[in-house]
Image (cartoon, rainbow, N blue to C red; front, side):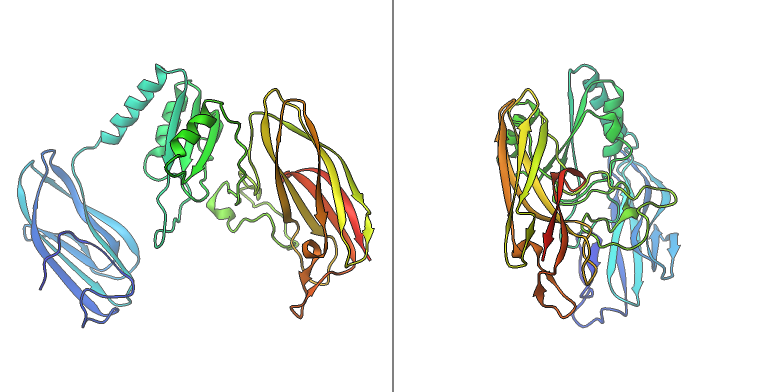
Length: 376
């Protein structure tokens, strides 16, 4: 016997009690619930199946079987301030439990009212900035990559006002945005920006700083595309699905700026080398826009024919360069055995003779220059 402040538990590697097996037990909670001033219309359970819920002695949810995780709600309609007896029974036969007592506190239109207010404010504004984000962390993996809650509705309603809308995303992973991405003027990924994040975001949003960040991961259009990585090995299958493209929403290395850049004049000198030597890849980058900005130049290499399956493309280096409007700089990468080697079938590091395609660009899918390097 014990008293719990609330029924919200996750028993993955343990059980309700020290002497109770983690995969064979039943639990009963009894208590009283007082409806808030707005009343309560629905009461229920969210968790692994195998539960019953009684209200004032009446069985309102009977899910006394083991299937899978779900939320079950019953109509109860408690008057504001009224008090009711609650009894929740649960059983477990395999372990790994997630269980929560839930209720609807009677504020049906609260989130809608907040979105209405945001849309009204956007109509009176010159620019709208919507800050959205995800919940994630250890033991908090996301099955859906869309924005949780009603954030997508918020973005769509604000954008529908016609006011130029910018979305700022907070979080550490990819977000699918097919429902709203084409309705907004800009998308800024802030990750977890820290104490000075507000100042940094303001500098970018107000144009005091030209952004130059690059995505360290591929962002899919839809969860069904996963796993989706830029450096996959050739499989012999097509990229597309019957009902969806196989291309990402944003590729690895992607990032935009307030200016534009032009790449030119790639030279590999020499373009044929022994396996133990190096080559210098030289090229030029020019700021073709009207504002100063940084470009993140990326070097990729593809082994055209190897003794084992190799990635279709691999990032081998990157450099950040700041250029004034109209300014051009020569840049270079040194490509040697450390960038060309691979583990062979005997798990030994080797540089195999053959042709390597050298690719220089602004992302894994925005290649601007290419050339072939022959290793003897």
